[in-house]
Length: 203
Image 1 (cartoon, rainbow, N blue to C red):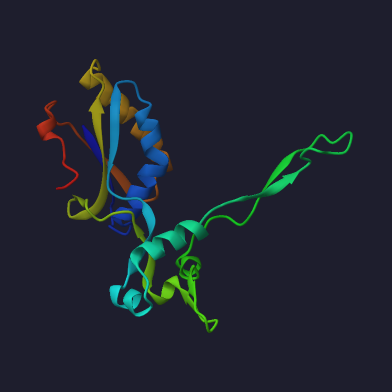
Image 2 (cartoon, rainbow, N blue to C red):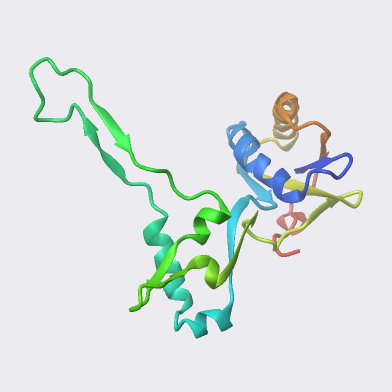
């Protein structure tokens, strides 16, 4: 079986719906008895970085340089500890300190340093790329009555009863529906047990 989440008015896009499913719905569904797999047909939010090949070439940079800079500068490193050994007598508190969190906005990513030139000028990520908050991928599109949606495909464990599992999944989704954003509805559909009837990620 599979079920879809869609917005009645179409005012919530498919990326928001996919992200909601990934963060709030998938794990509870995967714990339902009889569910072997629960796969998202949609996309979560991600930071999209669209590199401009002409600008990279003009600065004598490669895509690998950009990837390495992002990986090096978008990390969360512990800043140290309070109360770690050696500590004074009677010290009972031990706290791990965290530095600034990983980057989270296009503006912060845009300030990633790619290179410092001999004259002191700097090349930043926003100089060679367009940065935006978008979908993790755009290879899957789901529509319900022409409106954007996101779907979850359910596969059974080998020994599960299809009807019992379907009813359990419905019950779990209906219980979760009180946490759905306003205007979001759910639709269920059963498919034949044959895997050939299961929706394809590439369709």
